[in-house]
Length: 326
Image (tube, rainbow, N blue to C red):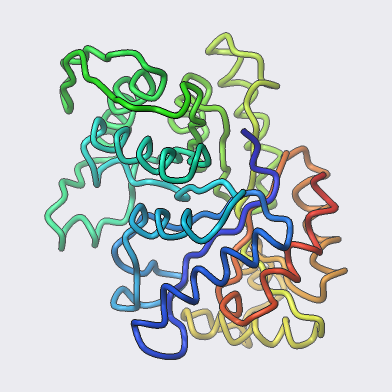
């Protein structure tokens, strides 16, 4: 398993009617495959996130959507970025992702995190609990999920979850990849060192050197060779053949999400755009190379929130970035 170039679809606010949303998503997935992306990922949320849009904007259930993408594609891996552990019983989640693996002929990746969006929990009736609670739950969940994906039968009588010689049949394979996503240098990275094949690091790009050092430390503490876990970074990308058009898109996006961009000083703008990669294809490629790959991250996952739904944009981004990660 390798996620060298992923395309995340976090936004379903498109022109047209609700009936147009899924065809637009599938068109993006096919473009991603044609453009050289190796993985297509969707968010596991029920409301749109702050920083992208308003809660009431369209959001689709992740695993149902991934099954549709599986039927519309042939080679790309399929994943969330990332599954919220609090939303599903862990044995059920293992069964769900195993079924996606069967549907897609071995292309599923289980990506998981502790969960964080409190509004969803409150309004939909999921227990949110404390930060510590959520990471205890994630640890227990992985004690159930990892064996089930490997053909073993977990026996867990935990504080949060129970599993008793749990079955998971059939499976396409016993090495379905596990990816953790997050930025927590102690808890998330510690669990990644114990359970994960891959860590997607969620942070500002300027923090990546420190995050990589922390991961190496967690691997050392777990007795694991750091080179056996791959890393990637999620980049908010705005690309256009006209770099100035991309920068206008960035400004409009920031203003839409409540950032008073025009009145920020240089330091404020740098902070507001630390996860953004914006400009012409050559400019975006240079930024990704310098700010992410040269730092030591193995791969890149991008989203294209403002314009990914426009035909040709995803393929342009893929063909721009694929040469960097081969």
